[in-house]
Image (cartoon, rainbow, N blue to C red):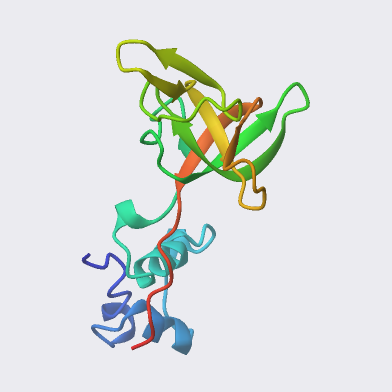
Length: 156
C-alpha cells in the first residue's frame, strides 16, 4: 500500500522528503488544521501496521452485511432493553448450511429431502470449555461482527 503520510512539511522547514516518523521525532513539523484531530497520526499508525485497508479489523453492522455462514468471528451483542453490550466468539448459521447431529444438543430442523439436520438460522456463541457443546444459540440481539484478527507474524 502506498503511504499517504510519507512526506510532511518538508518544504516549510527546508528538509524535503522526511517521513512522518522522522518529522515527529524532531517536533518541528506542521500539520495545519489536522493538529486538533490527530487524524494524520492515526492514519500513520494504521499505515505502520503493514496491513492493507481491507485487512484492518473493524466492526461491520449486521444490517450492512452478514458474516459467511459458519465463519468464526467476533460478535457484538446487545441485551435489550438495558442496551448493555458484550463481545463473544461466535458464528452465523444461514438457513440449511450447517449440519448437526440431532442428539438433542443443537437447535435444528430436519430436511427430509437431504435426510440431514441443519442448525436453525441465527447466531451461535462458541464455547471452548464445555465438553458436551461446541456452541450455543445467542438469544440477545447481534448488532455487529468483526473478522478475527490474523495471528501475529513471526519475528524476522
